[in-house]
Image (cartoon, rainbow, N blue to C red; front, side):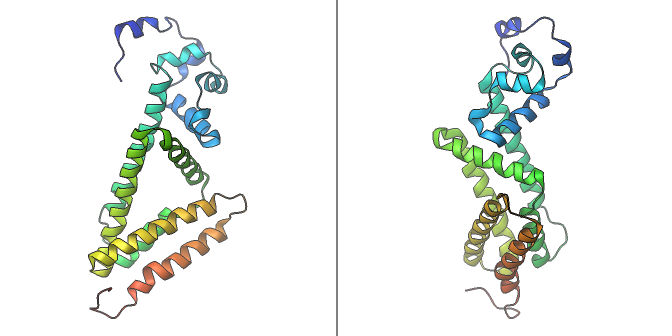
Length: 216
């Protein structure tokens, strides 16, 4: 978002030493963590400044206002998701079954980073109830994810209708797995179990159909 001349002139003329070292991404990282911990409502400039060890005035070296911070935070997440989807769609020489298993393995993990991404997305979905633009953005992400899964299922089944139904079931299974894996008691064994039963029912069961047959 371009700054007006009046906005620029309102910025501090001499940044404090700590502020001079901070980057726009430092503020976005702190905002992301705040949203993970307490939702988008917890992203407050004064609190972030305290976490980063600077005054609130230093915030304006990187953002016009709080609204621009939130917009940039959501945009960064959106661009990251689009990049991940593009990578998932790209052909990599694997046969359809191996590719589906790879997508499933990448979709259900238990790293701290993945848990944080899940919680941030949950925060966005909560916020979408009062923000039509965010709701539309999330609908686009859901649609793109389903289209990616459907394209892989078309390769696996040769049937467009079955691929559409199976992609919906797989997406719901992945979303449910994310909910389960975000519980405190979740561990690597649970992640392995969830991936194994989803692969059994929604990949290998399709793979085992007689050669040349189509899914009804």
